[in-house]
Length: 66
Picture 1 (cartoon, rainbow, N blue to C red):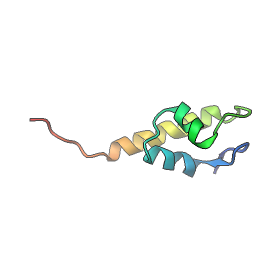
Picture 2 (cartoon, one colour):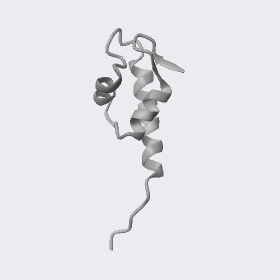
Picture 3 (cartoon, helix red, strand yellow):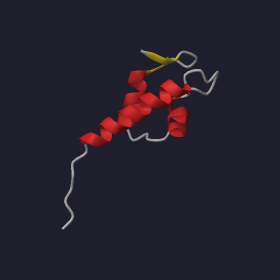
Picture 4 (cartoon, one colour):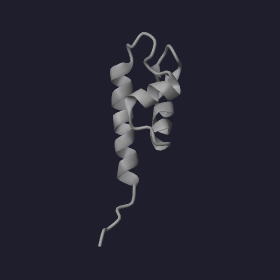
């Protein structure tokens, strides 16, 4: 699904960016151009990034510190 129509950024693009280590919205904007034109998509893009980051962090292995 397209999140940012101005720059053709999809939810898949945002999830992929999160999987590649993007955790901040400003970095997402720099990498994809998402929400740097009209800004109508900003809240949806932020929500999508937040959910994607949570999923990425949930899949990281837990390491015990002795």
